[in-house]
Image (cartoon, rainbow, N blue to C red; front, top):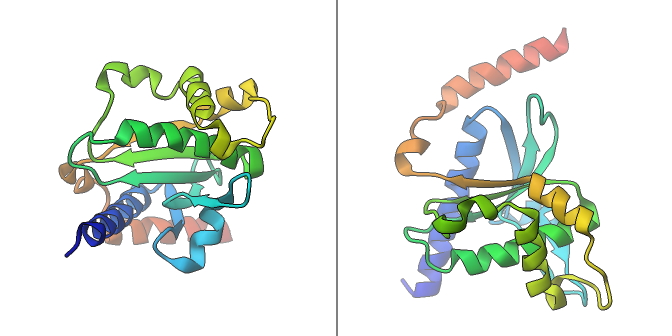
Length: 191
């Protein structure tokens, strides 16, 4: 298997596992994923100039305080920090663009390995969003477009950094348990 095929398979596996984990928390419905072409229009956004970018997963959070709030997620099935920080900075610029076009969304970065641990607290701050958008200005902002500080702050408030592990994945509800819960939710909604 070539390196590209290996990376694609790892990426697809990570997306499937993140989708499963999110759904089995009982707090997310994840109908859209990158590796299913039927659902990519929801996950895809236009850059200035016409090129597109997309997120890996999308859906709705359930239950208070997030009932029916939409989210978009990027998944990195990494076994080491690697280039995640560089990719995360571009991800923040993508979040800014997506929020400016169709927002608001909750934005999730889901990984199996932490990165930039020394600045972990700052990774979801408005200053980090602002700096990342500035860094990728030419790719994600229209020419001459000013940076919206309130949008940067809003994105920072809706950023999630989620670090999974194989053991943690095994602690969520089973599919059978979720079926019972979803059935009860539907039964209560009919009343």
